[in-house]
Each structure stands twice: as structure tokens, then as C-alpha cells.
Length: 420
Image 1 (cartoon, helix red, strand yellow):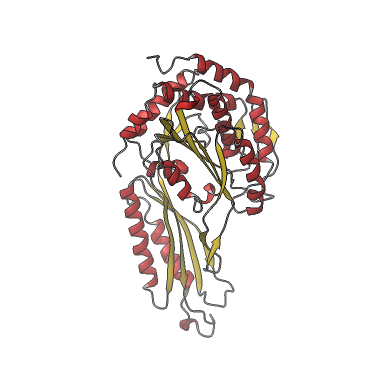
Image 2: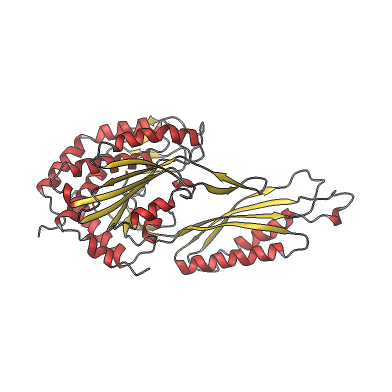
């Protein structure tokens, strides 16, 4: 069999095609980045999703828009709101082919309207703009890689499902079911198009992630005339916050961060409402369970205070994605494929999370940073390296070629996943 790092005629044709399209891919990404699709900008998301559906209709596949599920959020009054976001883009091709892949990405960004709007060229290779790297550039790479693959000789050997979500940056609460469903429909491996790390490395292990909101109710009173009659929700929240932050360092791989405490008002009123909003990360399922149990214990302690009641929302919405035999086998295959492009791809563990966590939890090994090279994501300094479009699209096409010609055995890699 041909070595994994050796180029075939199919590889050469794809590389030539994608190299010629590099600037076109950049131009498309720049145009897409000009449309604000912040996670809470529902109108912006809805205005952009037809553009995506139309673009992916160029594939030999069925494209559909599917409603995301409504999900709960806690507002600044401590009440639960029901949110409905934009549509999920679902793409399906050749479900009976012997090789099956699940691919994912998102079209929301972290930037609300008006906060980061300009797209500009910084130098000959760097462009700055919202979502250029995370991840409208990744969506373009995915699309062009598939078009190049389908123009080659292996098309009928491989089927795929693509899930493009409107809410990844806020947890995929409305779309996680679609990721799980696609992953469990027979996929051998997963491919997700988050940007590569700033060093050019791809992500290895990922921690699991949780978001919690704890709402505490007390009893208001005049702080001068009847302070003793009040029960301060903010005081309870302060003690709770110290307990939550005190979890850091207690168990390896677990971090907790209190991001905000909402509530209170005039200084002459005992505050009767406080909302503690915090996140947590855990390196494996056992650590996540310990963290969850610890949070619940601290919550119970808070509401055991005289006059304090409350409710707890949230939990680990993305399971951990540790390294295992299946992941290592896939990483090795991607490394070997990269050598065919003159790349020495490394895999670095990260505390960040993405849809790859969900796909892994559904039993499918995956590589989740196959998008463009870039950096400073989630900031107004976000940039993309413009010469990375053709390179990273070629990497994906060559991976698909190898899945079809047997140099990457997707079925064998998946069999290395532990039984769920």
C-alpha cells in the first residue's frame, strides 16, 4: 500500500485546485465576516443562514435547515427565559457508502452587533475581523475541501453528515442533539473546523466545560431602621463565591471561575436577590462528577442560611475529551497526512472546548481544529493567516482520500473507542 505521506494523483489534483482557490476562499470569508452573527443576535443569524445553505448546496448532498431546540437562560431577575435561536444547517450525502464521516462547525461568533465590525488587512498574510478564524474561515475550508474531494475518484466511497450550528459559542444548548444524532448515525471519525492553535498545532485532549447559575433569594428590609429583619442574598452569594473559588486546587484538572454576581441595588436596602454565574472545567468524567457534587454541596450550604432560598441551573454541557487509543491513532494518521503537504502537525492539549467534545461523547474519535491558522480569537484582535486556506483545505481533502483508499482505516480507529 502507498505510504500515508506519499501523494497520489488524486492528492495532486486536489492540492493544485485548492492552492488556486486560496484567495477566493479568503474573499468569501471576508464577505461572510461582514455579517454580524453574534450568538444572541438572532436576526443576524437568521439573515446569514440562507447564505450558508446556498453555499453548501454546491455539494452533491441534501441540504436542509432544521429548527434548533428552545433552551433556558436565567435573566437578571433570576427568572428562567426560553430562548429560540436560528436554524441548524444539516447536510447529508451518500449514507450507504462504506466510509462515513461526521463534520461540524458553527456560524455564530462571540461579538454582539456594533462591538467589532471592521474587516481589514494587517499585512501581506494577516487579516483582522470578527469570525475570520472562529470560524467562518473554517466553514469555507470545510466546504472547499469537500468540493475538491467530490471532484476526485473516491467520491462514491465516502458519505458524510455536516452539522453547522448557530449557538456553539454559548454552549450548543439548542443544537447539541443534532451533533449527537449525526455522530451516532454510523460515523467512523469526526472532523470539526475550529481554527488551529496560534502555533499551528491542532488540539489534543480537551477538558469538559460547565456553566452554572445559582439564584439566591433573601428578604429585603430597610438597612437603617430594620437591618436585622433582612436576609442578604448578596452576603450568601459572597460566601458561596468564596467556596466556589476555593474548589480550585483541590482536585487536579478542575478549575472554577465565578464570572459575575448580579443583584442588589440601593445601599439602604438589604438585597433580596443575587445570581452567581460561574463556569467550571474538568479533565475527565470523574473530575466533572466531583466538581458537580461539590457545587451542589456549596449550594445546599448557601440555602441552609436563615431566610435564604434559591435554585440551581446548569451543569457540564460539554463532556471531557481525553486522549485515548482511538484519538492517538487518528492523530497519528493526521500527522502522517500532513507530511504529504510538508507539514509537521503536532497535537497540544487545551482547556478549551468545542463541538468535538460532543462528538467524542457520542462515541466517535475526532480531530476538531481543522480550520484555518489564526489567533487572538474572542477578541477584537482576531486574525487569520490568509495563506492557510488552501493548505488546510488540502489537509482535509487528503484525509478523506486516505479514508477511502485504506491508508486511514476509519472503522479500525473507531473500534479503539471504549464501550460507552
